[in-house]
Amino acid sequence: MNFLGRVPLAWLQLTRYKLRLVVAILGIAFAAILIFMQLAFLDSLYDSQTALHKLLKADLVLINTDMKTLANTGDFSRQYLYRALNFREVESVNYVYHARDDFRYGSVRGGKGIIILGINPDNVPFEIKDFQTVAHLLKARGVVLFDRNSDAKEYGSIFQDLQPGKPIAAEIAGHQVWISGLVNFAGASFADDGNLITSSMTFNYLFPHRSSNNITLGLVTLKPGVNLQAIAQQIRAQLPRKVRLMTRQEFIEYEKHYWATSAPIGFVFTTGVFVGFLVGVIIVYQILYGEITDHLPDYAVLKARGYKHRFFLNILFQEALILAVLGYIPGLIMSLGLYAIVNSATSLPMNMTWPRASLVLLLTIIMCFTSGFVSMNKLRDSNPADLF
Image 1 (spheres, rainbow, N blue to C red):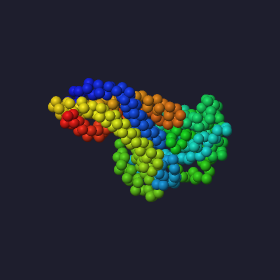
Image 2 (image 1 turned 120 degrees about the vertical axis):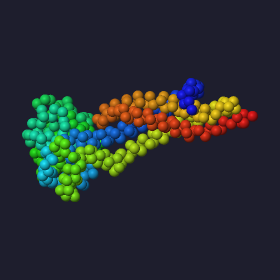
Image 3 (image 1 turned 90 degrees about the vertical axis):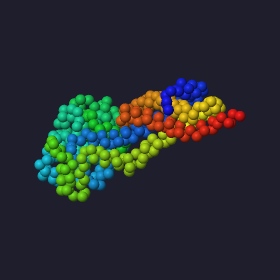
Image 4 (image 1 turned 90 degrees about the horizontal axis):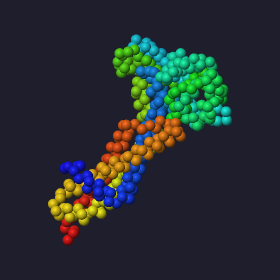
């Protein structure tokens, strides 16, 4: 079958009724936008909820087995982290305290709350650009650093009020703190609007009811050339059941798995992709069905003159391909604009990626071809005998 041999005929049939073609393009564009947005929300969910995980300077991560997601933390004794130092393959260990609490700046109460991370300023556990220039500020009790990528509209005029060398006062969990600088960190997520980084000393001052011996994340850095899985298995054997050890990538996948399977929001976005695809199939089917119905007498004449059924299938799928491409282009352009609007309104990561753009193009083509397959039976109605 010469698939591209009769494109002009397919194009002429589609453009014969221009209003119908415009409606079809808009319908397919709408379906593409639905898929683009749902995929973007799904990726944004995963990216925002694992942004902190990806910044960890560690090969292995220890957590409490009760922790299903970092948004709902559980602590464990720091002594279990230090057991890793018994292995010569281990280069160093580190830790992170994690909490979520109310935040107030002036009369503004910050959104859903804020994440507070306690660290050792002399051994920063995150990959943060230029952090060493401000890490020393954390050595004073009550000093915190604000995540520049937080959702600014939820925290009043902090970004405008904060000047170099002039800390501003805020309140966390009923305690006064001093915001002394900004850092480029993980940003807002679906669970929280922002982050603060402080020292372990200040963290324990803010949360005196929590034991300073209990940490949220234990981080293990291995020496170069070490077999990651082999040493992980050895360390794991020395830990109690209430402590889980994973590689950093496994920790990332662990978080993604929770939001994909246990959290309703992940299911909602996945369902939205399917709904967008189904809407597109229905729209294109109606268009192709109408095209076939309008040209049944013409097809019957051509069949009487000896044209095979596959000739008409060729035209049908050419029309489906043309509709897919024409609908995808405005869908892509409008999605770019919507991404910018959502990113500005929520500070969530909403960026177009080549893999996503390619995937939606493929899904749009499959969507239109599926409609073509469903419409094929109507072609069989073009019986030459019906003309007489």
